[in-house]
Amino acid sequence: MKNDIKLFEDYVLKKARKYYSNNIPKNMKEVLDKELEYIKSHELIDTIYMVENILHYDKKYIGSTYLTGDLENSLVLYILGLTKKPDNYHIDSFNGKSYYIEFNVDELFLEDVKNEFVTLYKEKIITDENMDYNEFLFLKGDYNSKDLNSNRNDYCNIISFSSFNPKENNNNLKVRIIKGTNQIGGCITEIESKDARIIIDFGEDLPDEETKGKHENPMIDGLTTGIKKYDAVFITHSHGDHIGLIDYILDDIPVYVEKESKKIYELLNAFTYKETRFKTRKMEFNKPIMIKDMKITLFIIDHSSYNSGMLLIESKGKKILHTGDYRNHGRKGKIFTKTLKEIGQVDLLITEGTTFGRKKEKYKTEEDLEEIERKIFKKYNQIFILQASTNIDRIVTFYKASKKNKIFIEDIFTANITDALDSKIPTPKKFYNVYAWIPLKYQKKSLKFKEKYFKPFEEKCDSKVVFQDFTMLIKTSMLKDLEMLKEKDAITNACLVYSMWEGYLEQDSFKNFIEGAKELGIDYKFIHTSGHGDDEARKLVEEYIKPKKVIPIHTENKEQAKEVFKNAIILEDNEELEI
Image (tube, rainbow, N blue to C red; front, side, top):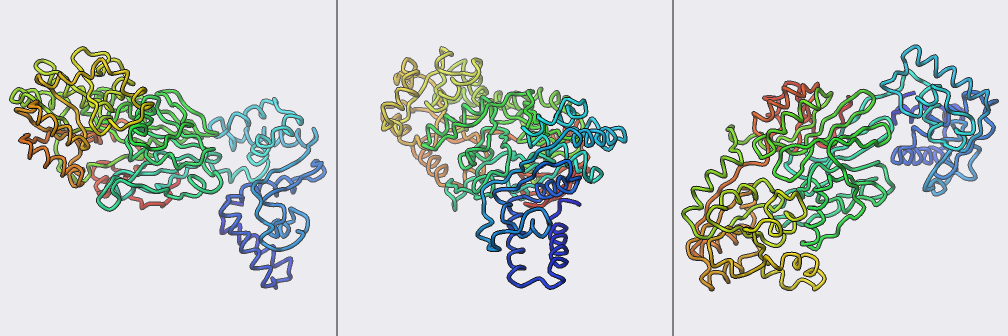
């Protein structure tokens, strides 16, 4: 019997009609309908089938079997012959918080199941590819009656896989894009195997004039509200549209974040007064994590957020690659092809398509930007840079373009980020010509905050450095700092460089800051290259990954995926695909 709610409902109603001689009382039909909806919403069908199979296998081998919790007073289970007659038929009695199976087995039953398991293995219905570790131990004979009685999960897995309906065992993977098939940012992907269910990325929608950057709990049952239904959440990188909502995730669901991305996430929250989820678990590149029957491996990739990754999900011989955000024209561009070769062919590729629909052109590399900047920077005494603090590639680019004739100043937030990461990144504490600037808005921070985030840089916070030629990383909240520097004659021949996605320029905070800078006599220039791949990068993915199926996400122009990926499938949000 397939684990399908419609088949299950038909099966129950057929049994009920037989029990009530084809005339189910109205009040009993109402209770059945409510219970079926409860069973569906709490995903109890697999458990019911398993109990039915155990009880109906051969009762002489089963010492005792009990159902408790959610299933205890169920009319559905009574109709199926799996429980005693309920004390009453009121739906309020069917609201327990948990369920479990108690049983005792003897050696004859164990031997009988073992023989059947071996037969199925010989007939290749069970194979090395679709068999998990517990089933392997069982096949070897390393289980006994005592082991099974003490570990009911292992026992039930073995029974359901080996003894009942083995040909209907489903090793396929199910994929659902909860959000992200028609938008850039805020994508949420669900992947489900026979035993596990995970989420990849859980971030904020990109800010607009309506939301003003404020976000609420998306209220996803079993993930952010209700009873846990997911085994883990994996984050590809530290950009807010991928990690920004993890504080809402239920506490008992582990959230895996790459260790350097975790540092960035925690610093960002500290400086913006956001709550930090302290129970996040560190994830490292090329070190697989097992979640039941899933193996999840993070591979490093080139993107404008430091230490971004692609996630390879493997289960029962199937492979899914979730790209996160990627490109091949950044400072980690050489890693791109190497990573793709290492991953190899996959059954399904879930790829970002941010730049679908944009002008088809080869994007500038960070080295190209460096050369452009070097020529421009020679014309000015002061350079102000408006860029993301997590874009370490761009920080390195601006530092290299400046270092011959200007000192380099990082706002205190950026200084904390660069200090927390790799020693090769320009940071005030390790580079002699790099300084820190504490913005005026931070003067009201608590003493405790200043002690933790300001004091380590106090030796490199000399305000006198602004009276020589400099390049300074700034934020839109620092307009008063520019006004103060202008009053002190520290701005004489200056240029503001904007180096981020152009879409942010529609926001009032960016408009007001740039207009304010221009009023101070500061020139304005746009120098940027995308943090996302162009068609050349996508063609490399197609060439090396050779995906059997492709789902485009993180895009407003998903139909264009067909121009690059021959096996592209166009889905809508919450539409399910099985591989």
